[in-house]
Image (cartoon, rainbow, N blue to C red):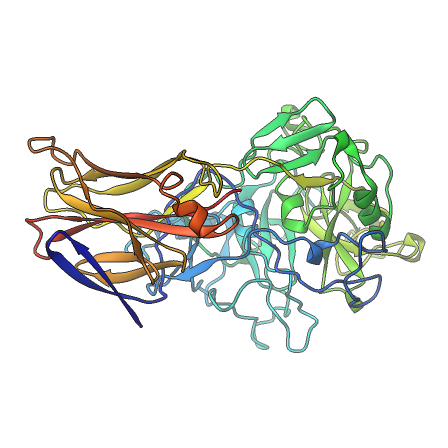
Length: 539
């Protein structure tokens, strides 16, 4: 434990700082969390990371994005400081629920002092995927970080397979699967896939029941904000990614798709690459499908701003699927129907090609081989084996964004004020000004400070509030929150962290954490505290 001393004009506080948890609140921009994959793979098995120009260069392991950043709040909840979402740590693994039961269960949940839980969208749920998982490993490894999230494989007596650890989302499929089933999407954290599951009464009169991991926070995560750049590219301002507007126009092997990214000079840029699985899934428009029951929603499951050569398109990602034999399969996303060869009726020997999983599913395909060797597909639902799939390229958009995430609980002041920290502008290591952090709804005419840390988020009890940043803490100059006679809760503490040189000190690409503390003379402990803000410094 580290002790950090902060003083405010005659008041001296010793603050014990330690790693702990934060209570996340919503954000309005989407961070695509890294898949976690760090090993490079060839057609079969792991390989030495290939250099530019070599086969298999540009795969998932060679591109690092925002690394997973979770905090255990110690109250049965987990905060994701990338997405701003808060998650149920321990699902109910005893009682499986149908889709119609899953939403009401989440809505009624009271956990960690919060009652605004809900069933996650498919994009929210997929943000937790960790592609270092494998159900075929010994022992099996879940596709979710079990350092933070509780996970259980089925018991031998349950009648379920090892891979039957599917979780419901609230995203209903706009078409139907299996020749007419009403369907909703879920994520399987045992085998690393997205699939549509029966969400209504099945023909045999039964319902399909699976697990629920509830979420709370903003519902804007995963909502795209596309702009046509009129040069063959589209920028998603929600994620900061730039995409090729047209796919590869020709289906190809995984190796060739990676090379297609390496060699592209689309719109004059030379840093195109094949997207990882989570980046690619972020493009899916789940309000569209080729078999949508509403004619206005018919089409590939992607925004019409993109051109699709083949409406049944399946697109490669750069991510290897470790569930498949010898790591010889790679992840793809279906923008068209996710088809398979099914025996209808069961055990009849009569196979039909049907939409098994729904447009927007995420599966995996062989990196190389002859699809003629798989005339009835692969697996219990006959997933079609294509081997030649399309490529849609991505690159990081060049501009910095004003992405910040508020987290932690504020301490209500003696006058009932709810001090809240917020920001305007872009944190920059080189700009002379322009990133202003301010705490509003502060008690007026009080002295206070804004203090920051590079060490991480926390939620340490402190004088009936929460210290929300890890030590060591760095204080800035003492301020006055406003004039005598100002309105109740009208006080403000403000600081331009660019002009103060703080962002330059933190450094480009690094994260900072900031909180405000002020004197509250009527509070039994004499202080008031805001919530906190995390931010990433741009160039």
